[in-house]
Length: 305
Image 1 (cartoon, rainbow, N blue to C red):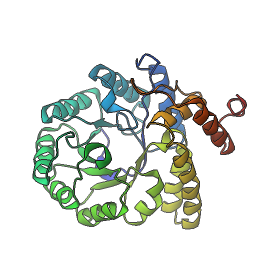
Image 2 (tube, helix red, strand yellow; image 1 turned 30 degrees about the horizontal axis):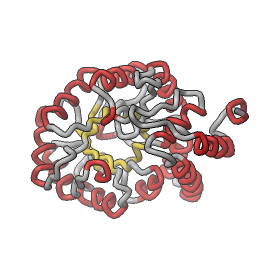
Image 3 (spheres, rainbow, N blue to C red; image 1 turned 180 degrees about the horizontal axis):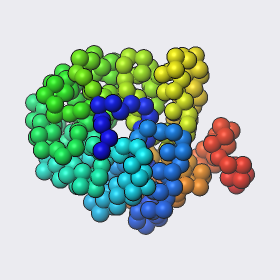
């Protein structure tokens, strides 16, 4: 079991390789894990938003997590994403993840019904009290309609209910507020979910990123972190500028269809999102191929096809 209080760097919010009928592509999952680990990433997050967790049934989630953990083979920590609208369901998902060998769980607040901060506090207290692994908050209000406010995060952190947060709001003022509110909590981990904000996030005290672009260009993301930690700020800025272009190219179509298409172009897995979502259209995929080839993110053979 990895210690979460020292975890930093680049974690990949893994895509979930699927076949056309929606079945899990275990071979694709294994290839993806090897691909990102070869890029030097520091951890894996299966079953986040990029992993389409809310569109997968429980057997598929268990199969994906199990395959990721087996493929990782203890080389890096594995944090399981959890997005359930009921407290009992979220608790069951955390327990299932722990039983499969996950090192921690990234838990989104309940969605669908509006929730005030008292409700958010109660939810994470209930989860954290019984959780067999450390819990991180997943702040992604564009999907959940719930903002886990900095004061709420700080309260939960001081109580020991949570060990960290991934913020995917793309709101840098919010991110900085989280860093300020929890700076005195030893070992609390603050990750950005926004690849485009990695350098800025590190500058205000973030621990790193849990990001989707790491599926496609893991070395590019790791380079930003390494440059920053080595004190090479100009090199980190140049690397961040380059990654920005990749991230923008991966936002075509319905999320995460462009990431799935890029992985297909790289020969890692098939391009299918979870049903009923559709794959990226041919025009967008052709343009994506051109961009990936320009950036050297395709093999020469795949660049020509």
